[in-house]
Image (cartoon, rainbow, N blue to C red; front, side, top):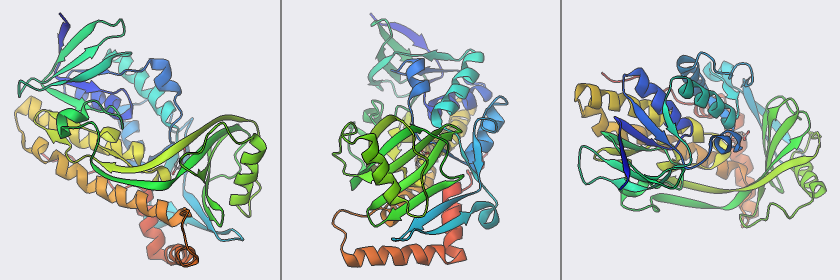
Length: 398
Ligand code: PHB
């Protein structure tokens, strides 16, 4: 017999979405249990993306007075887009175009802050818990069926279950009827990502569309850089030597000499655009990567997850403290408005900046025409700045 525990909201996934949701629910007087299959160390050390929109930063500052976004993170007031054989560069200045900025603050640092915040508030947070599925037989009391860190069965009964469990979501099956599927697009390239020990090569991010393919120059800290270059999706991260990696990167950012240093981590990131067919069924809902995946070029992943959570937290407050189901009934449609805008932006940045393996001379010249259309026009730069820094988060509906 499994051990049975009860809570108001059962949240699967202790990533940024799940942890912020538990905080917003606690602020509304609603208890929750958060479970994750990973250990705390694993969660705090997995290298993920790093760009936070202005809205995301405003929210982190509101919910966490101890956030290190302003001390460990860095405000970025622009990005550079570079293209062509000679590396023609155009800077997009966010504050002058849209009055907002973004912050480079790696996701694992956000997670360290959020875990500390929730544990200090005595959040019931369980690591090493493997979720097998959702029992939604009782329409108002769904339950999570899981195995705890000791291998013992556990049943978590709740008034609502939230899947914040990433792109391989287990909870998704309870909402869409299937663990896979959704509106889907694949890309014929991936990113080869590295972390290297060397000081930043540029103060701001450089997105470069070079004749040999895309590269992104980013940073992590005063001594560590994060860089990516377009590669084949089947590339083996262990295959190239450090020297080959540097040759590729240097060639793809004409006009800048990159600071080289030991490559301390390498990975290949597959590109996909996915939106689940449904985001909610009854008293089970999806947020973040469980609901959608974007290619990383637009830096939208974590921001989009947090925007979902803001909507869902308010809808759960209305449902579970006031018995008002109106906001939960419209959660999916309201979240999808933003999700599809972000899907478009991420697809657009990806297709404008990468060189498709089958690109013809026409395609290539058209792409450079597109970059000039956007970058030489204030309206074009403003669109890019508005989408990159993030659309405002819908104010809570009462
Ligand atoms: C990163 O620093 O990891 C990063 C930055 C911008 C992106 C994607 C990844 O668009």
